[in-house]
Length: 284
Image 1 (cartoon, rainbow, N blue to C red):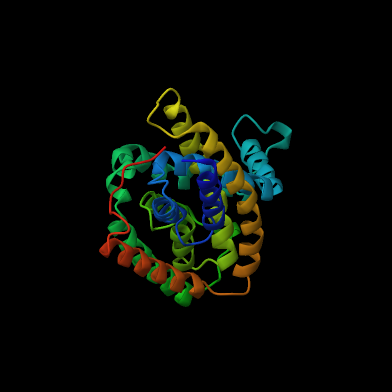
Image 2 (cartoon, rainbow, N blue to C red):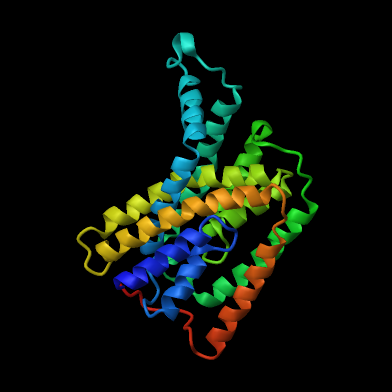
């Protein structure tokens, strides 16, 4: 991957990570089209550190408040400053931890499949369509009554398994969790905000795991272009967060549903005519 390709891939990652359209699917397809090949699950995981850093900065005050409340709610920690376990921020901290378990377990158990079989573009096409239709259905029937303050433990686990589905390119981390949130009656804004917060532990853990795993591995991701792509993804991703959160307060997710289906059709046509191959060798 050369420097221009790295910049393009960073733009794609930043533009698509927080939208319910699957950033991993876009990186997989765009990488093939610009001659960079399949960037691989490792490159995808590392560049997501850039976009999640944007989340960290954008939600910094919320994150500090949640972490502080969670910490002081622990037994033998709070002392005079003890925060009750019923505190909404303390509960949200626990729910983010619980919601992160499914993707952590499945990510390790299915690592070989994630790096190979799941990257088949025909699987991506199916996931784009199926989960696009699910997103549209969930957004249409969702009651829009629940907020993060009244989230229940079962709902937190439901969010977690929805996030784990994003291990398959085409599902979309934000798309899966937002769909689950809307099906469980959460408002669009609440589902989107929790999707961003829930992704932090999983994405940082996955990104740094892949980064350290690639050290000394000549067949793994190229350091220079990957760093550039990650930096570009951070800058673009921050702007997308601002825009997306404003959008979901007033608009439905229908445009994203239409886009996912259209994108899936384009990818299917490119596969049929031979421009894209279902499985590709990673180019570093």
